[in-house]
Image (cartoon, rainbow, N blue to C red; front, side, top):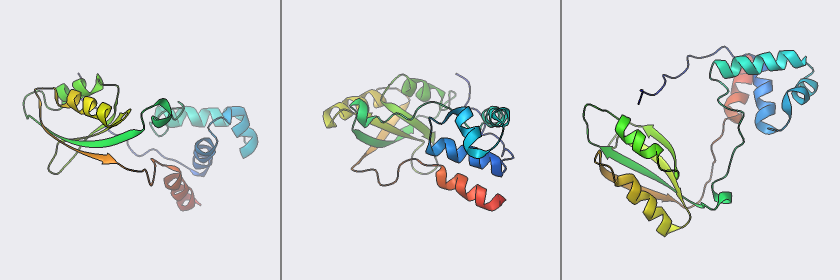
Length: 169
C-alpha cells in the first residue's frame, strides 16, 4: 500500500469560489446551472471553478452525505489504537481497517495512541463485534474505545468557508 497522500497546498480561493462552495454545501442538489443562475455568473465559470476546486483538492467530492444511523448503524464510537512499530509503519493497520466496512475514518495522531478511528455499529453488541475485528490484527497492540452518546456538533465546513469569504471581502 502506498503512503497517504500529502495534504494539498493551500489553494488560492477567492470570494466567488467561497460563494460557490457555500451554495453547494447549503443546497447540494442545486447543480451547476442552478448555481450559475443563483450566483449571477456564467455556467462555464461555475463549472471551471468547480473543476479547479476538485483538481486542487479543495472540493473533495460531489458525493451525497450519507447518515450511518439512517442506514441502521446508530451507535458511533471512537477508538484510539496503539500499533506495533515496525518496518511497515501504519500501512498494514490501515489495510486491515479499510477491510472493515464499519470503520468510517482513520487518522494518525499524536499522544498516547497512534491511530484514531471512528466506527459504527447497529447496537452495542454489534459495536463489540466491530471492535473485535479492529483489534484482530497482529499490528494492533491496544485499543481504547469511547462511545458517542450524542452528536452535538456534526462534521462541518460551512463556518470555515464563511470565514474565508469574510476575510476575502
